[in-house]
Length: 258
Image (cartoon, one colour):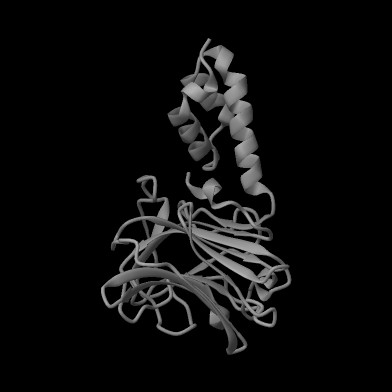
């Protein structure tokens, strides 16, 4: 009898589509023999369930910028504004393109208190864009948090950094790993509050892990969350963003590969 381990590509497809609100039961019945349905369906539901524990904000950006689990909906700004485009799975209207000039999403008056050092957290997104010598912010939270695609003397690096009231900089920077313009990367930042440790992952790879002074709690709170722009220096840059998640706990980045 076949085992569900014989269907890794189907499991990947199942979890991918499950995270996009497709029915696991229906998909399993279409793709698998009847005696395989229950096992794979249960496994997929367990994985998807694990992805939802502690999830406080989720912007899939598949047609709009509404928060699917919270109430922190994003508003489009700019003369042209963000433009829907293909997502990291190459599905149409599943991500937003920001021109680096005059387009961004903003949560307005709403910030996220969890990003003030009161809890461990995880912030993850798929990004694809242009690396710049003087990088702007591709997503962030006001004057407290910024993600960048940096071109440092032809060494392309991905950075997440913050300040706490203008002091206590927390900065994690990937090494030179052959990153390229216009290639999708899953970027995850985790903050382990009890141990004052910030981890930066690209895909499933831990690329920078640092312990900071406990007084350097990561960033000030209350600022709006922005995509395609940030006020923490540098303005903006060309980027496409997909699948933005915020958790109030540490989450393994392997769950974001779908």
